[in-house]
Length: 317
Image (tube, rainbow, N blue to C red; front, side, top):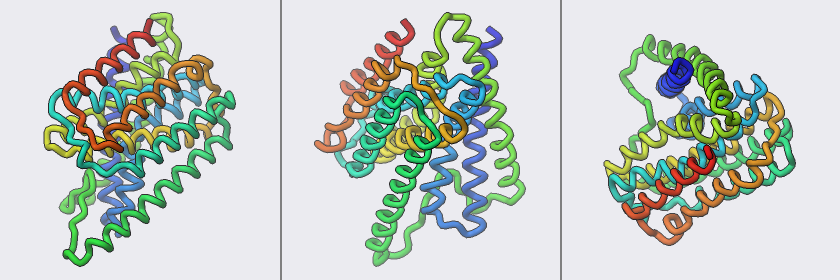
């Protein structure tokens, strides 16, 4: 029970530290004059992916690459099936009114690129550079689109930009506290979670890859799940769908891209024969909702959630 408690503690520390780092970094950047648009596209996106990044980097440094890859692949599968499925059961996601086609196509391209590199057998330093180059292009394109949109609506008057974690009245001392808590808490939480998840894997006779695909992946998808549930309740389907698509892109390109620069990541053959294809299939499930303007209703929510539970049951068995 102690290792489960410590793994849970590590996860809680990770989530709280990631949130603190986002708040501190956002408010520091806005205070020193970095535009909110750039903050949204970079600091917030990377900050919310910090738990996955720290876990993956720690896993490679501790010679547990299966945990790093399992975390990313499992998180992407959970993001589509569970993070969209559960909220849809609570409240219909009106995705028919969302315009996410371009970003979704980028996500599919990122998935195909990721799978292609995986079939080379190892994510090397050069693989990491290629993934990060793809990420840089997508961020540049998103920034260009956002600027065009802002120019188009400029005639309507000034538009107040909303950035997650921004508080115009936050004092400097609180910004510093958030940054310190984030920078100290992230590596501490990652160490606790990776160490104890590996002990659990040995106790139950399962591999680090399986623990990454299930326990760790589910844990690191909790922020996305919480965000999507709130978006569903507020009838903000664009936030829910955009959250999942953006998170999946960052997982594939940024997390593994940066981790591969730290050390090589050998690919478990099990990933090549099953889990990568489940991840791709889960991504393709979004086609009707993105291209044919179909809402994610409660029936779809049950089907998506059931598919995720079936996947996890199969992996653990």
